[in-house]
Amino acid sequence: MLILRLTRLRRRLAFLLLGVFITCAATADDTFIIGVDTYLMNKTTSPTNALRLLQAAGVDSVRDDAYWSSAEPWRGLMKIEPFWEMYLSQTQEHRLHPLLFLDYGNPFYDNCAKPRKPVVREGYGNDVSFVTRQLSEHVDFFEIWNEWDKENPVDPAFTKDYSEMVEDIARRIRANPRPMLILAGAVTRQGMDLGFADRLVESGILDHVDGLSLHPDVHCRTDARNTPENWIAWLRRINEGLKDKTSNKRAVPLYLTEMGWPSNDGRCGADEKTQAAFLARSFFLAQTVPNIKGMWCNGLLNDGPDKAETEQNFGLLNQDLSVKQAYLTLKAISPTLHQFRYDPQKSREIDSQYLLRFARGSEQIMVAWTAGSPRSIKVDASSVLGGNVQYIDTREPQKGLVDSGISWNCDEGRCSAQVPIDEFPKIITLGTRPALFALP
Image (cartoon, rainbow, N blue to C red; front, side, top):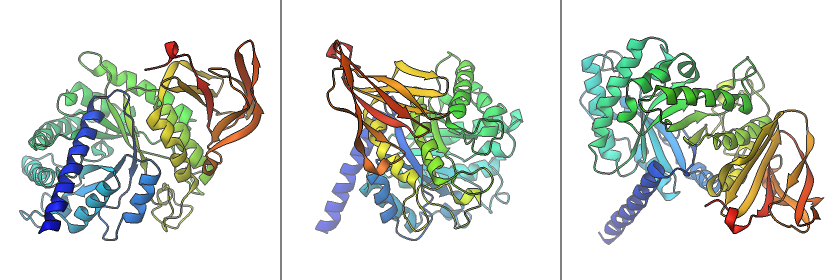
């Protein structure tokens, strides 16, 4: 009995801390969430080792499915699967904040149809009420459905049905006493290009949820827009378009809940080094859009052994949990993403060169790479520095901060150096700026 009481007390303290995280995530402009889509919650095997690796990599949040068909295996019979509880308990132990998407149909309701008809919508609403009530102390984010637009991104009636459903479902989730973030949309690239996301914002969906979730995958684009740099240029245009659709022209809180590049040998793929370089570049570029609140990598594990199959090779890890370079890269860059703020005034994007400045108080760094041919750039220090340039090279992320062997050249109180850059971002230490000019 004493053990049970201590367990309950520990859980209450954990839930209190999670509530603090939710409040901060909902209100702090500089909070950026590093997430990963795990797809582990519906497996009966223990997720401990995989989640331990995510914690070690500095990941904040994990995203997974809460299937309607699992929560209601027979019509009117509601249950929470034991392996859901095991997974969520493990995420808490590893300080990973779960995002669950409440999704997909149930065979007892119009043969797994989307909840557009009243009877199906009521059934789905009852499922959401039950699941969120049962899991409210374990989950930090709920996402309403997954990629609704995939079936029909152009029909306004299709958008309207989703928007009306979200209003009802958000009300049901808000009935829970514990605060949690509610996301809606999970809009695919087609839905972003063909107006689904615009129509959602126009419908007033942001009056009911905390943010719009997007799945801006571009790995299979053939129009020269499948690189991180072209991806962010497109996403910035989408972002401005969404802002124009709001009633008061305000920025829309965006959560990129599924994003990544595969490392397959065939169509739409690249090698594992390119996957890692693209991951680093996309995370740093996402920082340049202030209303992007977080990004979740798709996904944790490769889904299969076929190296030619696109969908089997998105993972940060192989099926046997051996690490890919993308995992090592995420681990290397996560401290920068967490601790430093992007400085747009000092950053430059010129001729395929990306020289992004970040600050932590008076401490300054530059994240530099090129989307073109390797070259050498001049880097100016923030203060007088002795010795050699130090940086983290994401080409070799496992080495951490290294001495480059390149000396700083100082003259009349200013220091600079010529640093080679390529397609792998380098996180270059620049020293400290005078306190008067430091970012808060």
